[in-house]
Figure 1: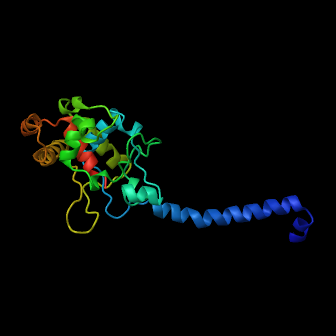
Figure 2: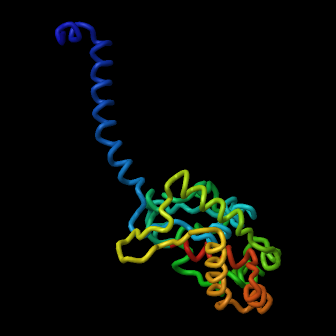
Figure 3: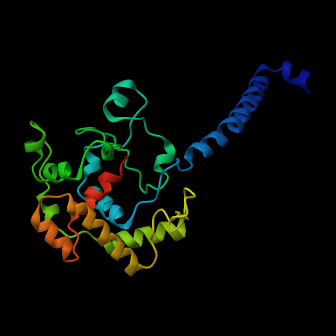
Length: 227
C-alpha cells in the first residue's frame, strides 16, 4: 500500500497532510477546551451588573472601548494582565471590541473607583483633559431595567447552565445568588445601595434609597466587576 503511495507524489502529499492535520486536531482541541473553561475566580454577573452591562451596550460603550488586552508589553504595562479566554466564559455577547478610541476596559475595576466613574460619566473632559468622550448625563436620571437583566440571568442559567446559586470556590457560600424574581430584585437594590454609598450625587442616593436604580449605578456596578 505504501509502495503505491510512494510512486504517486500527489497522493502521498495528501496522505501526509491528512495525517498531520489529524494529529494537529488531536493535539489542539483538548487544550482549546481547557482554555475555554471559566478561569478560577470568574463568576456569573449579578442582576445589577447585567443591568449595567445592558446600559454599556445600549449606549455603545463597546464602540470606542475594547475589552481585550493582548499579550504585548505595551498593553500589559498600561492595562494589566493580558486577557484569558476563560475570563469570558459568562459573556454573552463578547464585548472584545475592534477599536480603541478610549482605553481598554477589561480590568478597569482594578484601577478606577465608583467616585471616579461618577464624575467621569457626568463630565468626561473635566476628569480627563482633552477627552472627546461625550457626557452621559441621561444615565443619572434613566432607571435601569432590572426586569430584562433578571430575564437574561434566568435564561443563561436554564439554557446555558450558567452556575448561579452555586458554590464555585468551595468555601460553603453561594457565589452569585439568583433565586426567584422578587429575591433577585431585592438583592440588586441592596447591591445598588453599596454603590450609591460611594457616590456624591444626592439625587442618586435618594433614588436608590427609594428603591429605584439609576442607570449610572448599574453601569458602575458592571465596570467595577471588570477585573
